[in-house]
Length: 478
Image (cartoon, rainbow, N blue to C red; front, side, top):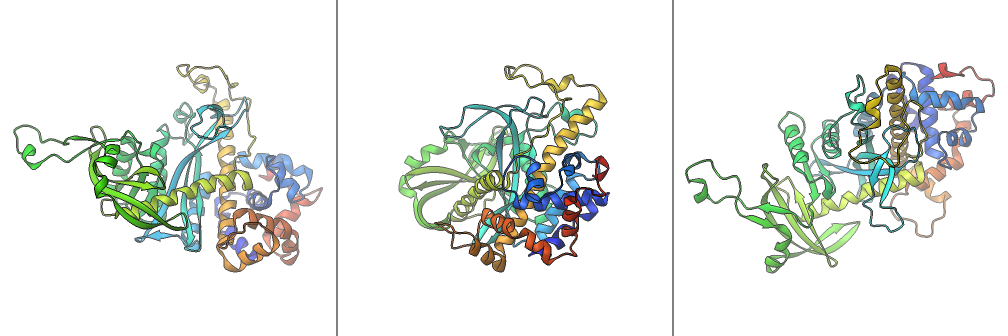
């Protein structure tokens, strides 16, 4: 396992212009894989027994100009495409996307804004201050166990004013458009794909972005999502209506899709489908309708009744069978499991980066008030704010890579058996172990693994930083 991790991390060396920065990258990835708390970057120092002098160079590493997020991210995608067991349906990979909100109360942290909390959990407040991340993952594994491997997580709201700054690389587009664009970018590496999204993402801008991508030479992407209960669609115009004088009709009679649950109740079909790891009995009705104001794109609607609940699933692929659409959409829940493990085990959102250049957060600002970042005109302050954003997204990127490596270890049969033996669980999964179990195994065995591989560059990097008086110190280390 140790040698395999070493081979994987060696692939990232061209992404760093300096050897010291690569050393910190390896240290951070290993630290994230076995950290026992979520108290920022200091957890890496504690769990790897690094010298206290490493704190400032470690903080500087996240702001360093020796690496670029896009280069590291594309290397990670390439490695997943080459080494991970990508789960495919009809020769297509399964991409899953969703938004996640992370509470942050820092007064001088870029991108923090007031967010509506849509969760139905009564323990959560209706509004909170924090970051809005958009995440895209790819389904890896086999029938015995699957994970949603993180591909890209970036801040997709609260930075519109920064997008106009030179060299920011931040998109001014909406969260919905950015999510579809990120999924299409991943398809260029992993091949043709189905992109599973929540009902919030069924919108005209999202379908237009998808249509623009599919019109190019890039691999085809189709969206499978869920419609709202008040969804309104249109039947196709009849041939007799199209032969009339004037411009051809774009749509036929309107349909309240939810009303079809009662109008077509006799035409529902009962079937057994594979959902959430087991066979489930559902009843469904399928129809193709036009949707989208001024767009009128033909979509496949599947009305599903399951355990007393009703759902309206939507697919842009009109050739998919209703049963396949239901089974595929059930995989969308895998990204919720990703968020849970990413927060609770990896601590991927436990960053504490801030900058005095960021205007102090005003908790009482109104929606119509101008963005405070629009007042920043000094070039040096803008660079500091962009560095703050890079550190935050870099922290999340490195945590994503660490989590993906843990998932790959869990899918390896021999490593999974070793991890299972060392940790007792009352309700242990008969399939592959979780990321938490692999982390526990790595935490218990890290020092014996370092002793068994004294010539490894991982061992060398960590030992250099464990010495009280090392060669790398200060900002030059990164």
